Length: 51
Image (spheres, rainbow, N blue to C red):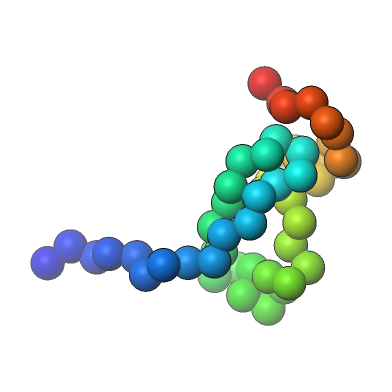
């Protein structure tokens, strides 16, 4: 029987505008997670998309 993920919370990264899902490593800090990756966090908030 395949493993199906439950519906996980989702946020949108303000830098790349991509949606990202809750991860177990963010369980304690999900309310404070803003960016989807280290790259986006180091870029800061921009209006343009990263390529």
